[in-house]
Each structure stands twice: as structure tokens, then as C-alpha cells.
Image 1 (cartoon, one colour):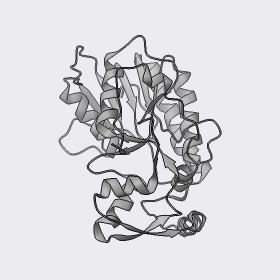
Image 2 (cartoon, rainbow, N blue to C red):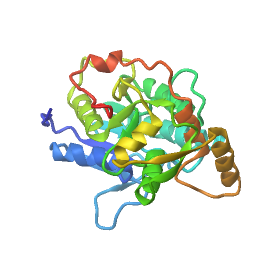
Image 3 (cartoon, rainbow, N blue to C red):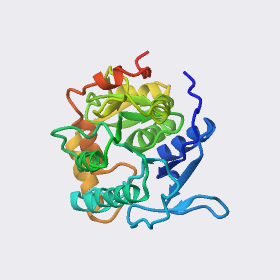
Length: 286
């Protein structure tokens, strides 16, 4: 479905230099919306605006923004206090600035890792950010599942990087934990629909993913598009190795907390709110 812009509403997108934020900004611009990109390090000669989660926005940063899409998230930290100090506190400062600037609408890109009872620090911080957004009024909360596309990031991107080198690769446990996948194009269609629609959206978070779950090992197999032989490694051992590396100051594409989010996903996600919208999500199983 193609959604054409019917407004000149100016949209601010945080994290617009990242994997997902850049795709959101590009897609909305292609639909004809004026987009202001808020990034940590603006490119020389661009009209990007400097902002990061560590900043307190000044009075002019959002003065001409009608709709703010908050996509930025600092994934460098795994410890709970650091995750909250950076991301939740930064989100609170941003939303306060949006209210003071008279921004009419806010949209928070959250995660399906955020659910009642979630164990990961990432999911708990996203829930806290959702609560802050809810205090801002009629905020739109979108919870993408495991986002994939031509160049996925995170754990999937790291695993696919290995799969492109060798057909024999390690697997987190048996790889049988169930996930809900979201193609980036389908997520962009949902975001565009919510941008265009000012009334009648559900109040509850919108889960952006195919409602049929798929085992993590099958996600990797289908995206790699080749035969793979997996060597199971107990996930708790992988978690301990990642925690040890992080304690030494070593960084990798896979974080110990991200692993918790994968193996402890929402056991009963509620897709009913999204199902009421004219947007569908393709399944990797088809």
C-alpha cells in the first residue's frame, strides 16, 4: 500500500543517522514530508541538527516541529543504571522540550522487548520511556519486533555476518526461542499511516510484527539464504562470556542484555490494536 502525504506537517526524527532512524527519515521525505533530522554528529554542509540523549535541548531545537518521532537509543551500555541514566533521562528531557516548544504530536519507537514482566534492562528502559511519552498526551507508541531488511543490525546482523563467511557457525543454545519479525518496509508503512492519521488510532502500544512466531535459528537460515550447520552453545555461557568482555571494557555487536531480550521474549504478545489498522506484516515463514 502506498501512502501519500496530504499535509505539510514538519516531522522531527531523532536518531536519524542510525539504522532505523535513517530509514524512517528517508521514507517520510520520499512521501513529501519536510523532515528535520536530529543526530549526534551532523554532517558538514547538511541541515541536520545536533542533538543526543546526553543533551538538554535548547528552546529553538524543536520550535518548528509539528510531530516528533523519537527513535534515538544509545545501545552502548548494558548495565541498568547506565541504560536508564542515558536513555530514559534523555527521553524525559527531549519530551519536556517538545512540550515547551508546542510540538503537537509525539511518536515513540519502542520495542517488543518492552512488556510487563520483561527481564532485560533494554525492555525495562523502553517501558519507562513509554510511560514518559504517555504523560505527554496522545503519544503514539510503536513496538517493532525483530526488524530485518537488506542490511539488518543488532544480533541478527552479527549472526548473518558470520553466516556469509562460513556455513558452520555457533548458535545461541538450540536457537529455538520464539521471536516475532518485522520487515523494515512494513514498519515504515505503519509509521507513515500513523503520521497521516491524527484521530482514531488505538491508545495502546502498536505491535509491529507478523503475529506468527518463528524460531531464531530459522530467522538466520531464511535471511542467510544458504544451508547452515549450527553448533549449539549454551546461552548462559554466551551471556557470561559477553558479561566478562563488557566488564573488561570490550565492546561487541551483541550485548549481554540484548541476549536476555532474545531468549526472554514476550510469551503472549497482544496484536489486537495493530490488527484494527489497515497495515499487514509479512511473515518469514511464507
